[in-house]
Length: 161
Image (cartoon, rainbow, N blue to C red; front, side):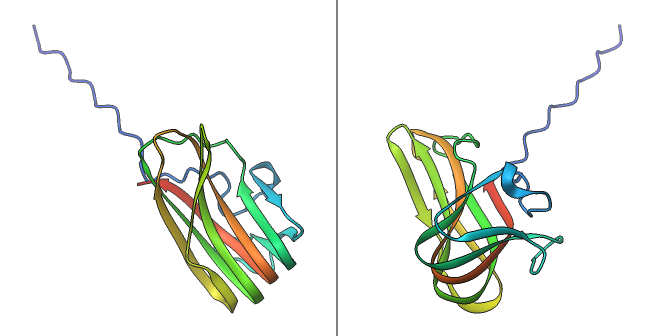
């Protein structure tokens, strides 16, 4: 009898696939992202890095205002390394903006911050890398703005590396 055909191997999942929904805010971000703090958040077309939209945060100062991926919506792989990236631009930012990678664990939260962005300038890439704790359940990203000024965020990315 002729040999049986060899089945094609199942492709491995793309380890570099963006885990965040709507990362460029090209559709209404309210379904995929949450906000926290006194800042004014808006879906904006007045500045964008890629596509036609970004998320704009106007902060009057303290306390911290935050844009967060929906809490507990992205399962984490314990021991895996994750990288978060975003492009930010700011106008008259007296404080600073940071990109934060957070793991929700059975014991609480563990967060790692990027280098800060401050002042006024063009689109700047921020990135942060961290390894999920052994008891990690979920992973998420957030933009934290502390201080008065305006910050636009675009092209968010969260990947398992």
